[in-house]
Amino acid sequence: MSAPVIDPVRPAAPGTPAGRSAKAQRATPARFDTALGWNDKPSLAWALRILLCLIALGIFAAPFLTIFSGAFTTNPSGSSLSFLPHDSTLLNFRVAGERGIWDYLGNSLVIAGGGLLLQLVVCTLAAYALARHRFRGQALIMMLFMMTLMLPEEVIAIPLSLVLGDVPVVHLDLKGTVWGVILPLGAWGFSVMMLTEFMRDIPAEIEEAARLDGVGELRMLWQVVLPLCKPALGVAGVLGFIMIWDQYLLPLIAAKDPTDYTVTVALSILRTDPEVGSGVVLAGAVIALIPSLIVYLLLQRSLVTGIAAGATKG
Amino acid sequence: MTATVPAPAARRGLDKRGSHKKAFNKKAVVPWLFLAPGLLLALVFKFWPMAKGIWLSFFDVRPFLGDRWIGLDNYTRVLSDNRFQDAIGHTLILGIGQSVGAILLGFVLALLLEGQARSLKILRTAVFLPAVTATAVVGELWRLMYYPTSDGLLNSGLHLLGLGPVQFLDNPNIALYSTMAMGIWIWAPYNMVILLAGLAGVDRSLYEAAAMDGVSLWQRLRHITLPAIRPALMIVLTLATIRGLRVFTEVYVLTGGGPAGSTDVWMTRAYTLGFTRNDIGGASAASVVLLGVTLLLTVTINYLRKRGEAR
Image 1 (cartoon, rainbow over the protein chains, first blue to last red):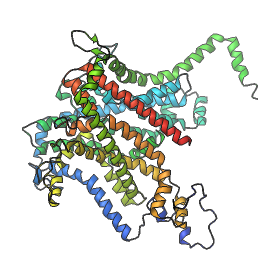
Image 2 (image 1 turned 90 degrees about the vertical axis):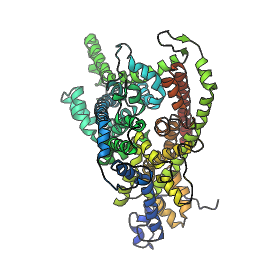
Image 3 (image 1 turned 135 degrees about the vertical axis):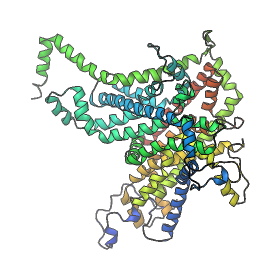
Image 4 (image 1 turned 60 degrees about the vertical axis):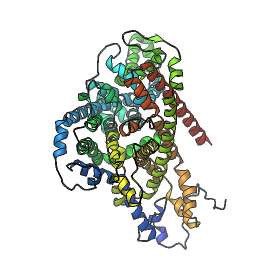
């Protein structure tokens, strides 16, 4: 291969050669800041980049506009679909409301709120034990939580639906209640692992100082550890919400009849309803989209760092 | 100093063995109290169903009549079933195509949108939207884009190019690839975020050094960037492979396995068997097979990854 060998361990040019221009001595000139060496000055490459960015935007973001425009259009189908609505109307939302979309949204919000709260509490408690205590079987427990990640809902869906109908030992029927969706979401391996990693980095001195003051375990968690974990809790919260909102199979198998569906699952009811048009389905899609959109736009920094950190550690 | 430390403990152990033991026990119990809710929920809603699924896969499950042990019959029945065999092919095509496509496109997006500028941050926020949208909503969105008449969104684009309307979801030869395109659209932005984190970790001075050595852009990409983000690439690949095998929701909301079973994947098949045809034993066997393959694959990839790191 004719490529010059680039030694990856070469030090970062600490002794700058005397003859180099002042421009090259800048910490990192823009063209060294990206893998492709993008330049921020107008040039052919710069124009190409803008064009490619527009295409990416068109592919990944513009389709969302069609949902909105369709939802506000009286009877969208084929040619009447566009990126902007041409006769804006709230009729679709009214019809979707008559079909119970707000009840489905209520189910979704209760499940998302309750599920997220339970998930955060359960995972924080477990992470605290795993990160700040040493006990026998710790590695095994860690592995069990890791396994819950490898054990997706899809694979255990069929037996899980039987378990939800008749919970072992207590013999409760959770089907048709929000608990049937909330409880299986409680122990999420990802949150446990991430919070554990984060809590481990809290210096032992802080904990020891608090212990000398006679702080008990619960107060230690609540008043010492948790305030230091706010960034990690933010990540667990936003990722947990997105994960719960995306649940499809679980609410489907936990439902006794269609009124128990969440808003995302209920979209299929609207779609198969011969009396409503695609505009109503899109109104439903908008209603199902907005909560996750709000959470994402408000907390996107947590989300992005969480995915990146979780992935690089995982 | 160090010698005096164990002394009080030892003395305490001698003097009041009882209370010391009690204190020790209390300390040992504390972590388990904190773990209890999580372990209980995982046990009841993850591990117990898993065990039950494995157990039921050996039975002919008959409501009200009692289950009958039939050994491996469920497995042979599922594995020799034509529609399940077709589903294996669809799952592999969809899984591999979707993973490779999403990784390549994710990498291109990461390279394109890397940078500190505020406009790039806004662009990344917009491009990431598909990854945070519920799959059911994405399904509705793509049904709309795939509208089969010539005035549908994608078809009107094709019409401009002089191509006839394509039955994206109704043509059994095309439907699987239409599903794949949606999968790539969902997962490419997700991979982009992971790969961007990898790109951010590349030593900038290497780019500078490479520029001084007069290295071409392609060589720089191949010899500096790619080796540096290899860990991130491996993670993306692992996640994508596992996800690909158990794909369900994407297919279920877009095509429901149709037309004519042309997009039926392993899990939609198992779902139909279990919930539509009430063949719990067969569906459990299918799930156990998938679980086994997933575990095997995860272990293999982890092993390869460790070996790769050791080298």
